[in-house]
Amino acid sequence: MQIQKQLFNRVGYLFLAVAVSIILSTSSAWAALTVFQTYTGNYGLSTDGFGSTTNTGTISADVPVGATVVAAYLYSATYGDSALGTVTLNGNPVTFTSNYLNPIPSVSPTFFNTGRSDVTSIVAPIINGGPGGIYNFTVTESLDATDGEALVVVYSLPSLPTATVAILDGGAALGGDTTSINFATPLDPSDPAFFAEMRIGDSFSCCSQTSTITVNGTQLTTNAGNNDDSADPSLSNGNLITVGGIGDPLSPTNPAYDADHERYNLVPFVNAGDTTITVNTVNPSNDDNIFLAAFYVSGAAGFNEPPPVEPPSASVPEPSSMLLIGSGLSAFWFFRRKMA
Image (cartoon, rainbow, N blue to C red; front, side, top):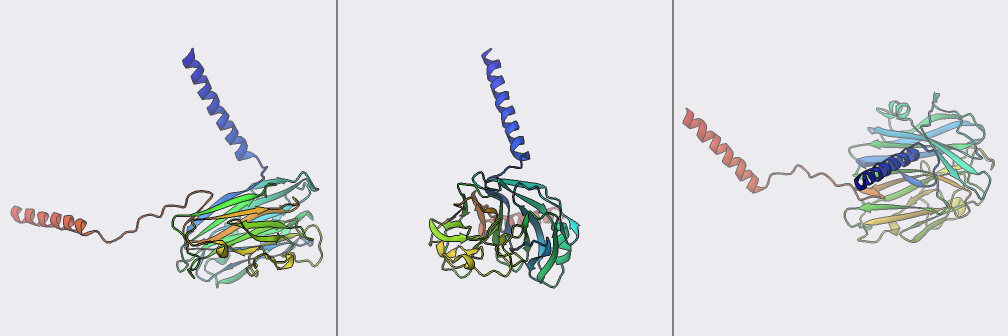
């Protein structure tokens, strides 16, 4: 009887775990930025945003000549309990396979809705083999409640240094989100080749609505937000979006609201010998939707997990290995001589 009870408990726990897993994997509700994809190698990153009350305009990718698109993702962000509308990219209807609802119970709207779509098949044929530089794509929206879109493109180019690109998405948690960037070896921020950059996408943002970002416990900005990527001069719902990226300089430390471009250099916040960069992002007023964070850092890095283990290089055999190989060849030659 005791064995049957233990077996029942084990089966029950297994069933519960599977059920919870299914619920989590199929639920559209989300309230935190989590790691979606990471790429380590000779990679580069392009990010751009678009918003307009006319619901049509241009979103771009900046990719150098000779590069190959590895992945491209389009995000669309709405406000006011609105479901995602129809979006096209270069005339192609975009299917959003991932929806993130970000509940904001303290304000109206009660939630923000962000969708993500893999648009590699639309973007790659235009960029691959192209002249390099800025590539423009036409984007259209069907809903006035759509604040705008973000386009994230990851590309490879052999001449680029080894780096890690990470894409985090979802929706900003009410209590803030923390991301740990972990490296296998100590960092040297004085090395001119070292870089670490962060870009965010933020919707339903304007009019002094702000978010705060700290890096390794030091304040980077209290003024993340605004609608820098709006194509319209008016501050109207339906075009309130900002995405750090094309055309944006690196924001200074603790910038004014208009000088914060949502593209940040993390290097000044790194101390020699650090192996982790900890980034915290929070919207104290709970009225912005930080739906995207994209990182581009030197070397191999793990995001909220240990860094990847680099495979051993194909080096020249050690002298002892060469000796064994030579001995084997000598024995083979001697054996053939005797057979002769």
